[in-house]
Length: 134
Image (tube, rainbow, N blue to C red; front, side, top):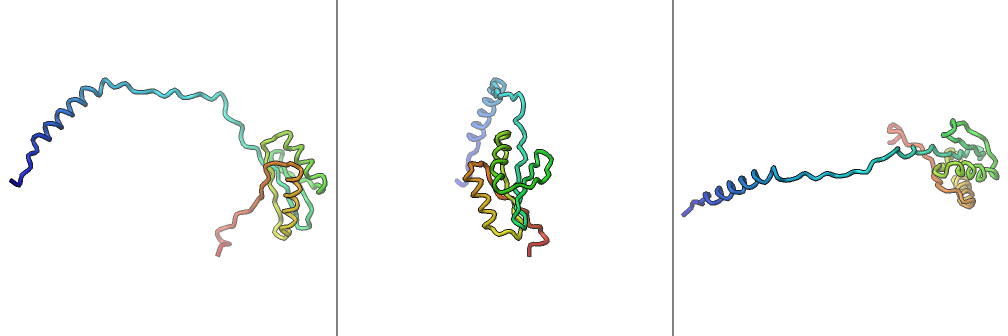
């Protein structure tokens, strides 16, 4: 006998179909009780930028307060940054060094800030344009 009898399979399928059709309207949908938020969190604060110029002079740019560069002495740098972070502890510090500045000068500024317990220090980089990549 080379034939398969599919009549019992059809019977089982029809019984299951009837069962699902009868029980589907009885199923209760679940609801998820989501928490509500009174107000959104504060937007991220613009970082402080410590700029090391080609002549190794230092400047600070606070983009949260307009973004004007202010020249600063190396001795006063950590104190000014700590004052700014005291007013807003979430404000990060980014160090931007000129291309011609030696890497040692950038590391010296970073090391000095870390010794003075300044938190959230990073390096600012400029992305390479697609035309410049060869």
